[in-house]
Length: 277
Ligand SMILES: C[S@@+](CC[C@H](N)C(=O)[O-])C[C@H]1O[C@@H](n2cnc3c(N)ncnc32)[C@H](O)[C@@H]1O
Image 1: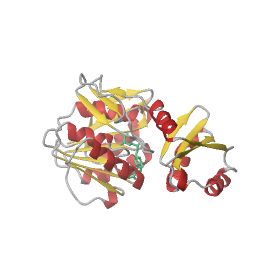
Image 2: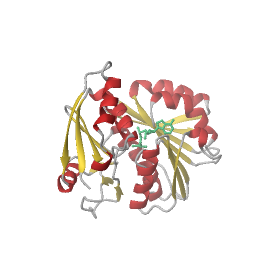
Image 3: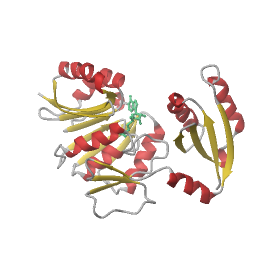
């Protein structure tokens, strides 16, 4: 099956919104370029009418234009591979790669992540900082929950670090599907992935909760995450917010009975470990 490559000239601030919109109508993969967003869909699902309908809805808010072309299968693979380089995290102890990259036997942990359209390859500061904070925590025989699992990268790493059971969930169905594919690629048999929010999660108690989401969702949901934490010394690792938001996040966490034990910063992004008192 050939793929259609759609080149969208849009303001990068709108990338997430367009990925969500296009994801709904069958686009599988996205690459962010200097001049906008490239989106890929199989030829049978491509419809210029659907694309125009989305463009019309956003035209009043932001300038948009697009062009498209058919990619032969060979070109498609080249395009995908060209845009995704393996990345090292946690001081070189973790390497995130796709299954078409060569393995590196010198690396302690290799995570196989084919991101499709979900966030989470380790290229983003927040993901790589959470991977690095996970290395600081003993996962052996622990129960772990990954909130907003994206590609499943943090849940997969928890399993590789020795967790006994791992659950992950994401509000987006495509992210849950992509996480399940990546869980299989990494042969992590003790990881289950669900679609939904914390409200949909079956009552359970975890030693470690990972939540790389964003400031507002964390501010709202940290008290709910605490209901899923085992008694002290269970831990919550959060990221997805800026350094200047730490104070607000910490206030909510303190009010829920948590204490900050570690902080990491990279390019203004922050990641924090909280522990139950
Ligand atoms: C910043 S990404 C992080 C992905 C991955 N955990 C990582 O560290 O790279 C946040 C993810 O949370 C999901 N999300 C946003 N709001 C959510 C909510 N209320 N409940 C569950 N997932 C949510 C998004 O769909 C997205 O996949």
